[in-house]
Length: 219
Length: 153
Image (cartoon, rainbow over all chains, first blue to last red):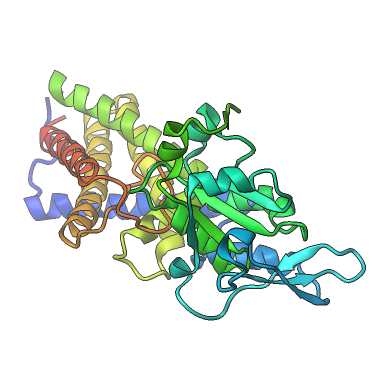
């Protein structure tokens, strides 16, 4: 068989192949841009962090109106700290959260024990969020909990926005797998930063809740 | 072409087509995964996110479809360019993974459109990152085998 590269030195061959690679990159960029332009929700050319994306979607929804402060839940002794200010829509009574401006968001969520949460579950205005991946949520979760996973934060947040922004919501409790997982704190911090709350993290998470034989349900 | 190189071409082609399609499907998640490595500034993230998945699919298609080339020279050229593309991509992935490991950042590589990690939480095990390193090293070695094996059609 005839050698296709009979006299070419190695560097020349690599250079030519590299040129081919650059051509592939160019074609790929064009294809990527084209497909992106056809997407329902195109990716902007400059990256936006998830919180910023959610903030933008919140800003699109929000309208100027009266402010109202959320009361702290009973199990904290009425102490404020992580509470969010809510901006109400005039006339409708619907609340749109306003982002916090101060402090480390991660530190603004407090812990709640499974027993305290169990006692609070009958009270109005409580939202329980499962920050675990959707597969685990669908398998089993705390009765009445909704899935707002860290990995699908933006998508889940948009889905749950009507629930979270309901003016009747007084407390939001987030949980993840166990005492060592961080998803609940991250989701709580994100929501707190976006102005939702007061945020609470379930102590020892799902593992402790399930071990205590407290109410669970399947999707 | 030796059977081993043909096998490598089919495996790599399939893997890269799948990985590219998975990333292409979820660009927002892929962008979040890329940011979690904390290597690149934010500016080139999205252009890379738009370019990388089609490049993977294209390289995979070329590796699998190179046999359709009219002449041996064309087939060789296609395979070499595709293998070089895979080598460049896997090198970049390896550098990113090693960099994350040495800095103690726990990340999901997002190689197959996996978990969109938007904040590094330390939950994902280092073992998983090492497994990704091992897998990429195997892919890199396979790409080298294809590249070297296509000198003479």
